Image 1 (cartoon, rainbow, N blue to C red):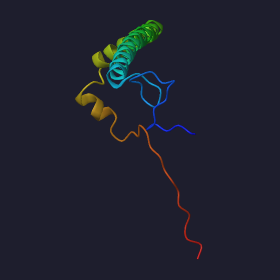
Image 2 (tube, rainbow, N blue to C red):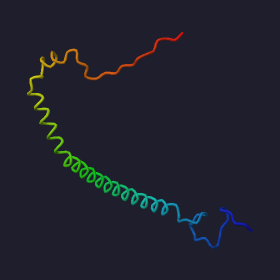
Image 3 (cartoon, helix red, strand yellow):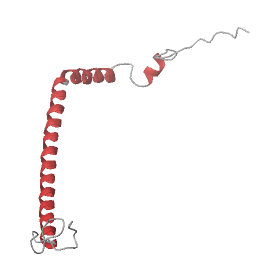
Image 4 (tube, rainbow, N blue to C red):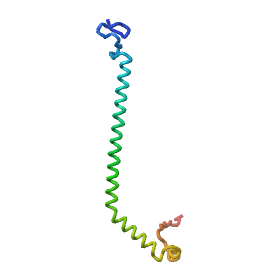
Length: 113
């Protein structure tokens, strides 16, 4: 005769459910303990992950800053030189009047009709 959850099974321990687990309260406690442990492990993993990402980002920033220090120094010197030059301020507007710095032109052919 097939067994259904409603019938008593002599092989099943007293208090066990038909699905074969521990009684309700003990199962809930076990689920809560395992869930809390997984939550703590997840938080610990994320803290380690973000700390490693922060260190890698700081090292990358330091590397780029170190490699570009000469270029930044030259740019700073040229900016200071340009600011001290005679073409700064109102004089620059007068000397560049009528001069095209950048432009683009398109020729449109006449209509052949």
